[in-house]
Amino acid sequence: MPRQIVAVDPTFGQRLKELRERRGLSLRRLGQQVHCSHGYLWDLEAGGKRPSLSVVTLLDAALDAGGQLSALVRTVSADSGGRLAPSAEQVGVPGTGLEFAPDWRHGVVVATKLWREDMQRRDLLVGTGFSAALFLTPALRWLTTRLDERPAGDGDRLVGAPNVETVRQITNVYRTLDNQYGGAHVRDGLVRFLNADVAPMLQGRYDARTGAALFSAAAEATQLAGWACYDVGMHGLAQRYLVQALRLAAAAGDQPFGAEILAAMSHQAAYLGASAEAVDLARAAGRTAAEAGVGAIQAESAVLEAQGHAVGGDEAACADALDRAERAFDRADRTSAPQWIGYFDESYLAAKFGHCFSALGRGELATRFAKRSLQMDGRKFARGRQFNFALLAVAHAQSGEIEQAGSVGVQAVEAAEGLGSVRSRDYLAALAARLAPHVGLPEVRAFSERVRPVLQPV
Image 1 (cartoon, helix red, strand yellow):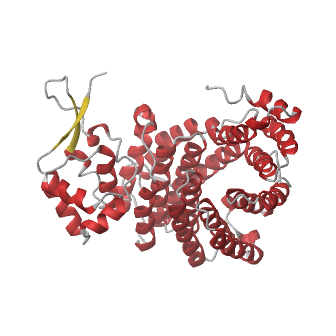
Image 2 (cartoon, helix red, strand yellow):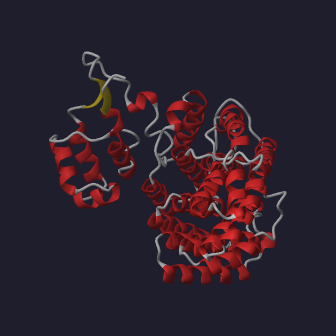
Image 3 (cartoon, helix red, strand yellow):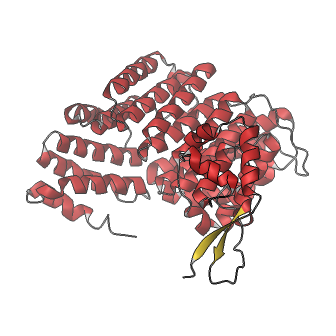
């Protein structure tokens, strides 16, 4: 394979400085946002160092530069006689979908480009990395954006209420399939739907009232695509879909669903171990939900904040957030909650409590809540049921109940059959690693034999 080096346009340092100063950021403050020292950034501005492509992507996001810095950095084949490889902007990958656009028209361009590139250049997009810090700028933009843009399109195709309802109904079908069978069974079809059907609608002709409804429906479909990407382990791509879903929700003025998207961002951040970002995103979701007056999302946000604290090992902060979640759940009028949060019930809340206590190593408490979490509609939420079996098995193991862990682990394997979910396999792999030292026990041996083919590379 040809050796690659990074070539930087001579104007990169000056452009970086201009963008930083325009945002009113010191080198030290910018360094905190992109996890680099201020001395390193000074060297970049002075031209003394070359940035890595990942650092450039972070700088573009932190400075809301819209890919300007990425366009000044190329990979060069050392064996190519100095010919430049395509720039980040030309291939459209590093910055694609990470921008929270300044206006709704630009937002349509960014979102539809993401869907198109997912169809045409998926191999490049799938390899993009995830950084929880890249969620924070879009979340801040959401909190500070006026949610009254009222998009009104002037394209050729007339779009009306029946078209919007079609988007919602098709998204609901995909959501049902996702809960029952996992993200792998819906992701590709949903992306094709966004690219072939939803994109032309957003580029069409509609009044402000229809526009708000259309952008809200498009946000729901985009968020679900991001959730499906997350479920199958495409974390960098999931991040891009969630950012664009948030931008579409902002254009629609849809506060409740914006809170739900921020909650999804927190969920993914916690799953990948980014405790601080998970807490910040959950708090942003909670603030938005409170402003919107939707108690169910306030409860969800609080329990996700608790999970972020648990991942970070802060038991006191976790307990405080769990208490707030429980009180918000008791107050919530779930009969008037949006349809898309129908999954958030007593069983879901118990599962989140269980995950928090498991993350803190409190197996006995985790077991109690994991058992409650299984009082759910296992047919409608088959993937969630599998997660909860895996949670209960881990909780038993943490409590020293190894035989029970093996027995429940077998149930978790059985529940995973037919699921297209990398997360389900991840939970089983973690359980298998935990029980491996006890393989001499019959129950654990039975689990190990059942789980082995499930964990084989696809």
